[in-house]
Image (cartoon, rainbow, N blue to C red):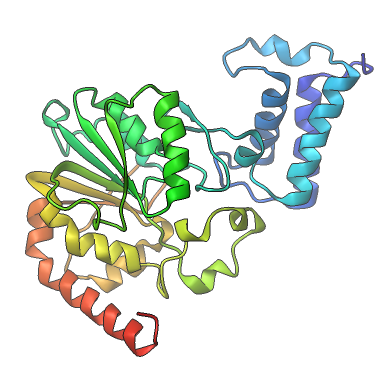
Length: 314
């Protein structure tokens, strides 16, 4: 045994290392201690539901070496812990993740767990669309929240859909969740939904250059979205109405870029949602509001296309 070394001490050791290295924590944890704990507990096979006393049991030399090796990889590569252990949690559920998808971290989890109540009646939700599904976490959590509903999990990335399929099988929801290859709504013609929910790309291109190194391990396709970050969001706003039921709702995350969207559409009555466990920049619009603002969305989409054409991007 290694002179009294324990999981608790290794967590402290890892947190000290991460702080000294100036790491960024934004992929499921928000501090060095929790990030170190995730790596230490995973390596030692300690579940979060085990008694706290397990953290104080002595470890072997081999166990300590394995843990320290992983902590060093995190510190030196700046790769998020979720990629190192191929696991992230969302809505209380574990998901397989790798560098083909973003690490799940959306506050939308709270809304899914609540069945999007009170903005919709959970008992009447029969179809849900998770647009830009990535790992499939929102779609799968929705399947468990709405056990009688059909869920479409759409993404433009074949790599992301491959990861989503892993998670669909892992959670046994193959009969409920359908992975769909789709560039926004292009692969969903004729479909209508009670709820459309999306955590799309929304980072302005110029800001991509200034992101912390941890974010650069994530697929750029899942982050960058034009000069102001709103390219995909504007497409969603323009097209969503025709894919919603009359009483349907649209829920979209834009993070701390909400002011950009509000400035772009000052006349649109975005409902910005609050979250008990933190998070921001998620708006809700119902089908009627989308219909009333349709011309604004159309104008914005046309203007963006003209600008892209003039710049030789389209």
